Length: 209
Image 1 (tube, one colour):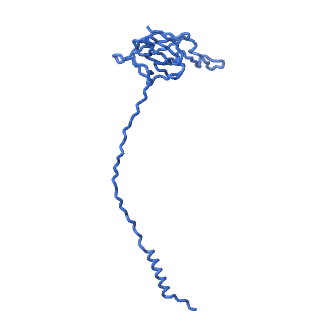
Image 2 (image 1 turned 45 degrees about the horizontal axis):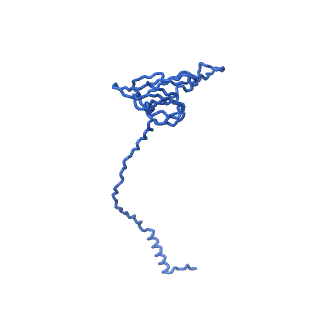
Image 3 (image 1 turned 90 degrees about the horizontal axis):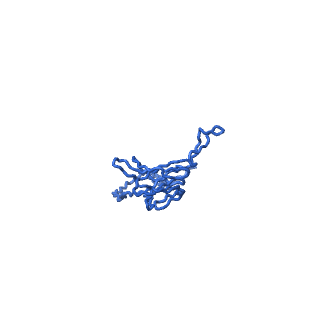
């Protein structure tokens, strides 16, 4: 049995298809086209703004005491008022002018209930200076190792605050017009300015010579 023969037209068509496929497979790769982008000069118009400093908050009016009085030798003079507490009564024990290198505190002491506030006033009861301090007659109870309880442990002993004598020295700048010394036991934490009476108990109102 003889095999069928391909027609010439079919053979030519097959050869043409094979040639097209070979030409497509063997074609050269297209090289990427480089695109030149012109560079632009960018000029910055940003300017640094000047730094504005916020001023520090001013201290409350009338709170800090006036500075001490300087002397030619570089020292300062202060007036020392020694207050005595005897049987719950506050009295002025002595007044003394002292000279030394008195450093100013960074700020006034915070007001706490129980503290003392001592004010120096003129004849019209205007405040000239002010100082606060821990109460010298405050109750102080500690464990005393020399006072033992029945088990041999230290027993609580009261060293102050029960009517015993106590002393407090307050240093204020000398003021020629000073006529009164007023002592308060504070009852609150809110500071009063020099035009307002502190909240608390008046322990003494002493006339100065």
